[in-house]
Image 1 (spheres, rainbow, N blue to C red):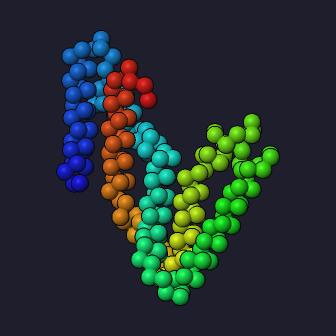
Image 2 (cartoon, rainbow, N blue to C red; image 1 turned 30 degrees about the horizontal axis):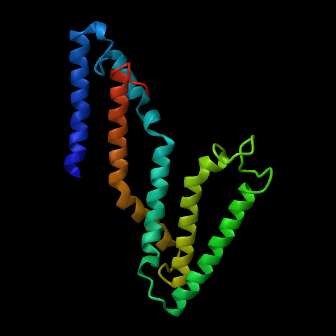
Image 3 (cartoon, rainbow, N blue to C red; image 1 turned 180 degrees about the vertical axis):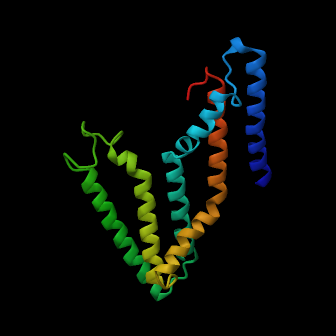
Length: 193
């Protein structure tokens, strides 16, 4: 994995150099240099804004949900009395969450439908992944506490952080790949973002 990250970083640097050389050699081509004053202003001025996308937020939510689910103990289910009771109560809570989602989407004039009364696109479709992550985090934390795998809120907090630690490589690759893609799009004006 480190070799891929270094390769992406070096590719970004190579793109900067090649765009500079091509824009100087072929000014009529329309290729913009990342090392020109305009290119550097674009690169540094838009860096944070371009990387702070809903995709990054969804990635963070997914890896946090993964961390809590992985550490809650559901994957190592042993069917003890406490785990069976925790599973039953968690499933009941999941049914309640499902009923709430249905009430917000399935009834006429539901709040999460679009103005036209459709699910796609709608506030529901835009919130689907964050909502699912929140439900997974909540149900996993509830199961972990009820089953005795989490002793307090600190354990739940550590599970959230564990997900971020486990998914840190994905965040790094998201940043490197996104910035490389956006740099290519800037350099080649015929590429549509």
